Length: 229
Image 1 (spheres, one colour):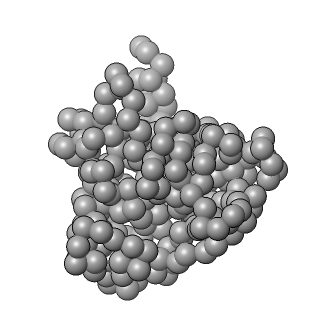
Image 2 (cartoon, helix red, strand yellow; image 1 turned 180 degrees about the horizontal axis):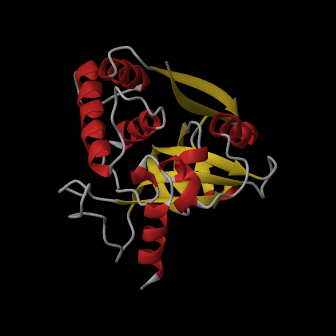
């Protein structure tokens, strides 16, 4: 029995309260298209509300929500070109006003501390077992580079925890929906996964703070996204 299968069996044997939930987070699929990083990340953020009105536990649930949020954003924009106001209006329309998208500017050095407060994750955790049980909520931010992979127009990703003091040694737990790596197969054609895997793979991992080049609004300032009821 290989290690991956053993890990999955151990997860299945755990009580529901300590299994990773939403389940798609530990082995995530990539975003659906080149234009859906915002709606993918908003779907992930909505999943962590664990709201029965918005069922989001599987990768298929996330894909359906991702595309529906994107459609609502495009409807708000009336064009393929969207801005923050369109994203806010589209997301809030999708939730029928139940959830609001909030934007907040913070100092770059304080990003990790804001993530700690929001998520409750302040040290490394065994992701496969306790992720869903201990992550209270998530924060979204934009980067122009992650691990030397450039996102020229900026790329929205999800922050789920931070470890260490606010300095160059700090690590961030991130879910990146748009990883394009030669030779890595996308998750697809499995139970609870969408038939169309999209152009990317995705990954959940701890990253050195300095391996992420945040998109800044002004020198030393970063825009964080959260959703609120």
